[in-house]
Length: 358
Image (tube, rainbow, N blue to C red; front, top):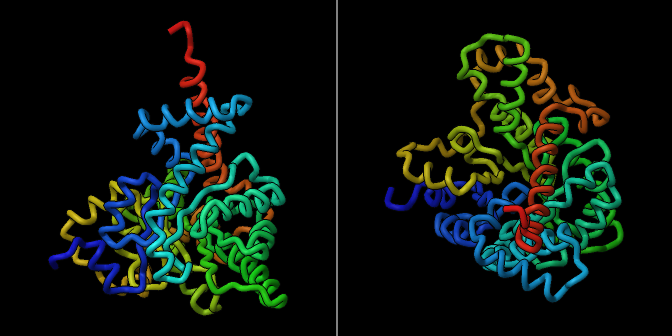
């Protein structure tokens, strides 16, 4: 195998690679390894701004000079928009090649609006106009499900995020289908729309591990690494059987199985840059049809028998929409996104109004 491992897989399966970062330097490398898309969230955006602090400090000061009444929060979001537009340009060739199904840059709606479907749909529509190849993230909360239908109806390609369970993926797919059908009924174009629904497989693992710790449940620790993979494989089979036009996307890497166990299907896998480097250097011999192979029955049964939170993640009807916002993995992730949104505002404040006591 002369090509990098990721490129080899991208060229020999229908599974596509997206880069879990909008950092232009990382994205350029990922594209050379076969990446045809990129994802971003408040944590990733903040990390990208800090990674090139000299440049973004200059841009923040310039923007402030041009927009003297802008708040620190508004300036932070303006930088996220600029970061996203810069990254989107790198993906334009893939966008044209795949007619909009790939070649997109994900930008996330403000997590503070997770209870406000109208605000999410409106911001999604606004973000979608930043560049022709933008895809917009909306969190899969109880209140946001209607936003998936409405924003899709308005022509926005969506990436469902803050999603960990089969139930969430189905609610998203059904809402997107409703939006697409409304557009079709009115003769509106959907030919370049490319919706995806994320399962944050590593965060599914994390939440099951929290349950194990809280309840003192002892199982072979390796079993806990399979929770997200099992949920993803189950959702994939359901999506395939029902013919949903949304693709599944795997994100939030914790181990190589979040890539190596999900190959071969019409899905997206979005590892962070560091994981892409590890995978290319790993020497793993990938099974190019691994997504079709079920999780070992003993592992699956151990998870189902012992972990209520895994049952909620795995079974289609185990987590009602009314409980999406209160599901532990949802709350943990939203808290992290909310904190990063706050930290981005602090970053801007420290640049424009540095603490005089220091």
